[in-house]
Image 1 (cartoon, rainbow, N blue to C red):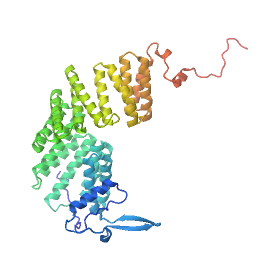
Image 2: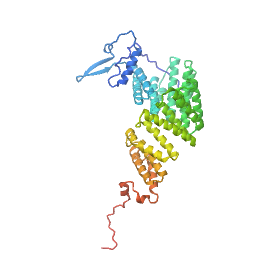
Image 3: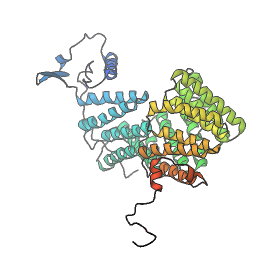
Image 4: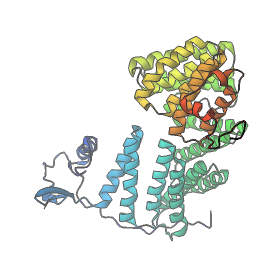
Length: 466
């Protein structure tokens, strides 16, 4: 990275401006935004200072437009940028994805106003949004777009650094850019370049050991996920083990940060052991019925089910039933997590030839799924497909065809007729209709019956001339 020497035009932003006010967020923000502003004011305000009017300091003016009073926010853009960054981090931590994305998008506009379009801070705001799209929504196209924008700013801008800390910050932004590009592109080359930049950053005296560990952990996890997608399970397991060791040294043996990385091993026995550890850690930190505890129990059940052993499937069933009871008690039967657990339990029962139990669960989940996801949703079509597979295993071809027809209709409307899943359902229906005796006595609907009629011919066929 010697050819990419970062440099920064330092912009002097005055810190003498007045602090945030209670009503600085504008009328288009909801009460949650306003409460965040109030908390920030209480934290930053001097306890000895009396309450001051916002208008007296020029932070907000009232303008009359067509006889209506309109509030105009006069907060300087650099102050708005600081507040927007704090809001974005707060919403991301609380998994309020859309609000976090909204704030990160505002940060891009504000950073361009404050620093300009060729400053590394502007590139940082772009990569912040890229990471949010990738980690919170799994939108790879958007992450790729904003990461490319950030890379262009960093590589084509002329930067100068005045301190070691600024140089370290620039290297950190470059590391995040190439790491995000590697995850979005599924490109090992980008992750290797990010690792090389991270090594150069480690040489700076201002970078402490915790920052180095955080960078190495994120890069190891990204490389492990990349190898997993490439079906290189041995390399993936090695990277996950490396990340786990770093995280244990960084956070401790029973830290919550270890939970997402547990169980990502190619060896089933080791994966189950790690999932058990993750479930134990979650049980120590969270209350019964919490979403985190349900997630770890669900992952553990899936790991047991994937082994294919009878005793492991019994363990998987017990964990799934525990999850289902907790979800139904805490969230109710009409919750997305409850329905997800029901689907996993139904799939396990189908694999263990308990078809009647599986069919009862699938039938009972149709109406809640229609209410939660909509009548025409992929979740409902998948349920009909599972019901069709159960009917096929029981030899009820007519019932299987009816279920496949409902599944195909929904997939055609939701995914389109050229989607892979839609084509697979159509092919299965055609194979079933080719079964002896089925096509003659079974008609899917009137449109299929009309298609079998002979085409109209205006020429009348006579056995003898007139």
